[in-house]
Length: 340
Image 1 (cartoon, rainbow, N blue to C red):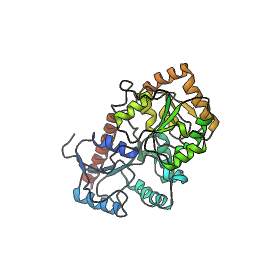
Image 2: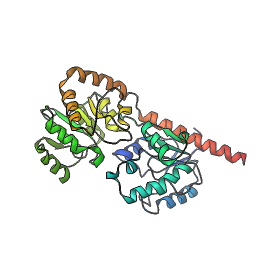
Image 3: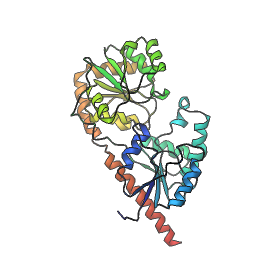
Image 4: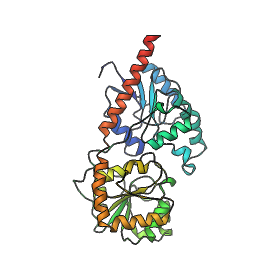
């Protein structure tokens, strides 16, 4: 790649969860990267103006953010990632300020950006509809599976079966229905949740009569998370809304059966390799839990098809596709400049 091609990236989106994991995996694989100065935190009120100033001062070939924070204006092509429209579509997760940010900052930026990247057809269709932009302005680039997530390796063992939930505890994650389904299902197993205990989850578990069946992993790195996946009897993600659903493919890559929802992006990501349930039906979730833990033929089928499905997802492919988009937009802008 041309050494004069330089990508200014927003490396504030780097970490272990959600968008930050996407940012971490992609940015470390992009060529010719320059990072932002670390003087303004994400979502500081001056952030859009500060980004515009940094972009003008640095004068890169292209600016890229793995998250949904755009510059107010950009002197070079800019590309940013909108993983989903959770704050627009899920009122229980949002508030006036979040909706105002999306409607007054993100939506106009969709019309100025060289490209908007998203991670599923579901999210792409919603962005086009919401922002009122042509479909060709949005590029789908799916997420990937890290090298730790394979069927081979250590397995977490508590001496009895457990199912594993990986994710945060926001309302759209549907934990109240999952807990109720666990209480009425015929299965006898523990439920591990990633992260630390909190009073809301503890009260919810007590109200469902399953407080003795709920355990917490604490904060875990990728290697430990892979051990938790491999040791689980099943991984559950009965969410009401996902732009992608990374635990689905991480679990499949570890050779673990998956139960997830039949709405938004989840059927798209899971393909035919998961038990799909209606996330608004406790009865359907409970029946899914019973079948995925007791039907050995189904479990074997899910493990085999899950490994095939997970093999379609690679962070190397994700990053190379994004790099190609960034290079293309830089070249397009350079060509337009030569014509002026």
